[in-house]
View (tube, each protein chain N blue to C red):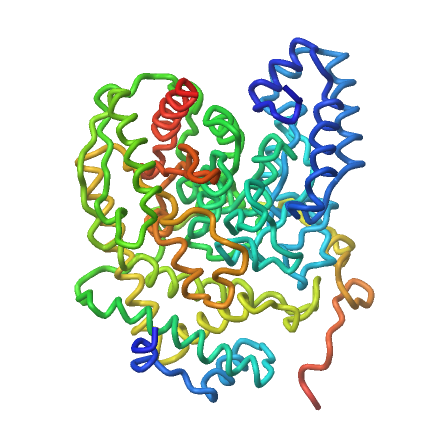
Length: 104
Length: 468
């Protein structure tokens, strides 16, 4: 493992913090350190794909071959507001309650 | 023989002949749960009262009309459900503390179909949280133990489902397979596990992991039972646009046909350095048996196999990061601070590879290699009708052995991931024991070839039985 670590993709701590912020995850300093090392190792492993020349290869996004799956635009039964709200930690009337997102 | 040891097929016969009641069958499984679950931790939620109530109801229906057993393929059969499937009125946690208090408000399509076929939900099984893992150890509700050796893992992510079936806590169980999460635990616990073709079974109402890879299958004690359940779960679902409108065959119809003239490929890339010698021997032994049964064995090559794990660890975390973005603790469940380490790793990995400037180097690159992996299989299936390969390069490993090294854990799925990238069906089948631990083999086929996989699996299973 040691010589692998030398050539590692080396995600910086700053990058780990930035990714966590983008993903809305709060990390402790110990976690930043742990994930920096673990994620760098995985990213390093992924580099193996660069052995392959893929310039002219079509990407595969899905395997079903299905395209433009439509259905009739008909009203069908769906959840009642009471059901949709049944697990909400905070609600008011028929609405979910959240903290303030936009300040005045 | 105890009732919990029966296959679905045997249980149906017994119910028909009135040898026992549905209540006695359900009771037998619940007793196994009470006896073994404190040690093995296979269930997160046990639905004792509800299962009893349904069993009594079922017995009443039988008294009114015996034909109900014939008409409903799973009538009175106790089934366990991976805790990723929404079950109306029953808690669905995904084995994560984020959803510890989440009660589903509707049934997944598969659950609705199983219920309509007469099945009784006996409980919700433990798994790696969000189905992220190969050992079951990433569960926020504690690891599940392997019933053959409690110091070892049962395989994951569908750990509890495999253990439930292996120990008779249920007669069958549902699972999900995104990179091997049905086939690996099936192999580690000595049961039959089916990963159907991507799109064959609806994903609606099942907590999404990686949407272009998630495949919905099940665990059973026999190949026949596996076919029986796919008869119920397969088919187009208006709520899942990736389910094609292809006809669902009766998977039991050609089950017992001979294997004469069927060409089965053995890919050389699945016999690698570092693979346990005993597993290689067992696999070759099973291949010999297929040959004796009339199959023609052909050496083939799937040259891009070694790139599958790297490809998967770009595509899968990218889709995970997007699917787990919805857990905000506003509409249901707790906030994102409750995510465990593995979910955090995958969310961050996906967020990174999808972020500006990296998309082409990682995600687009991986999607192109995915094409190469698919093409390997397309080429192979011009020469052979099915492929056989080992499920895992090792026997069930020790609890804790890989938990500190995520990359090492990821590599446990080296033989199972290619089928997910190509969207192929694969049947994992027990072929024997090494040091009292089960070994499995997988049979892969072209998309929508489950009927053939069952046929090959059934022949091999009968051969194994005859030897005993």
